[in-house]
Length: 208
Image (cartoon, rainbow, N blue to C red; front, side, top):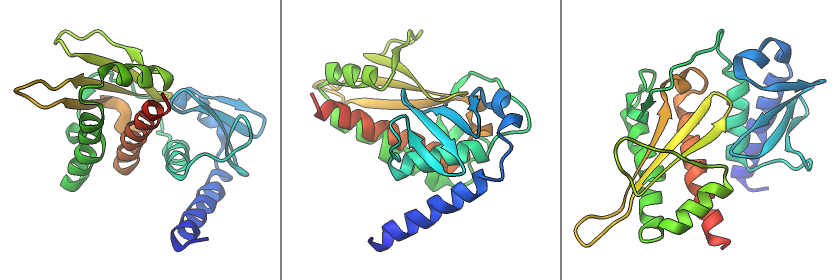
């Protein structure tokens, strides 16, 4: 293992140990997920994962990539004391709990600019990749070349707004969250959720 792999494995094991202390039955309604014995089924971007004290695996029994493990674990461990429901779409920097200005800059560069650059002039590819990740086309009052909603986790949706470039303006991408998302994930995990979306949209497009 590399040093990074050692660190990732340690963090993963720490998350599993914390999850082992969680009362799954107390959070199913608040998170909108289902319990199966000593496991919980957590859908993450159109794919189901089983979470228990033994770890986080997909339905084939394979551990997902580290970023997915962190977001899913934090989602379980950050379960709020009640359900929140505020579906207004907001940008990452609008979250009241975001304390570090650099977080917003990182989200913009690693999520929105990544998507703008990769899918400029490739709108059909973005649409197909989004559908593969479970995205649903979303009607907006303001016209965009593409607007698509993704269910990242129960209670946490993302809205991708994309205008392709032309001779005068470069492509522009904005990713929004529903306002209540900040009660279900910490700022760093929300950033990782956006980054996971961007990276997997790119992966999907490269397979076609």
